[in-house]
Image 1 (cartoon, helix red, strand yellow):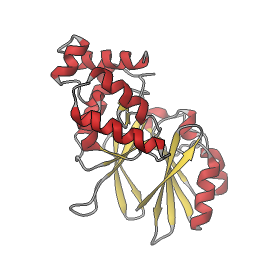
Image 2 (cartoon, rainbow, N blue to C red; image 1 turned 180 degrees about the vertical axis):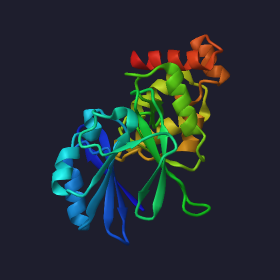
Image 3 (tube, rainbow, N blue to C red; image 1 turned 90 degrees about the vertical axis):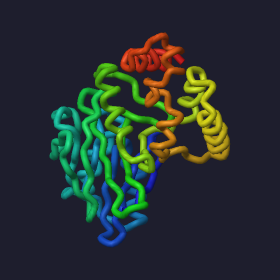
Image 4 (cartoon, rainbow, N blue to C red; image 1 turned 135 degrees about the vertical axis):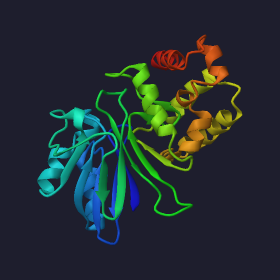
Length: 257
């Protein structure tokens, strides 16, 4: 399964999954139709699935147009998003399985950013290969999503589920927020050498116009403050030894950053 990253809107990413053997494709969180249709035309591939992580318009905006172009396409989303995702036909819950070509993906329920958010995880096919995590706006490179409909406890639980995946998992998050996320991270975890090095690497990448997505989950565990709420250094900054309260205070600080 090939993952093709497409740019949309100001800072969104759309992910096109392409099975070369069958020449079929699926798309994750299509914000706009044009980049998807152009890529499908280049591949001469048929779109068979739309995998939505949540209902926000910049993740579902192209659903109906893609359905018009490919009438047989199936539209997937979280069960709790019923009535909020245009064209949704499949309603997914924690532990459900999805199939694209010969790959089986796992559905992870990750409320927090919204009450219905889900993520899609495709485990490695063979030992030594990487898994693919499509996490929408729950986990970002260097950050996490705002809490629009969920609670800090829900987001901590959701991030814990994602952090339990293998370290070599590729994290395909839906926005190019990495540089600003790491700028904030340095204000609360300034003695973290891995974070300092990552910031310099990301800064150089962005100056060259390069994308910073996907990231690697093991790197996130070392440098993302929203996965490090149990670390003493961050608990000192937030003046709390309670992990959920530490997370909540970090998220509040980021909201004001």
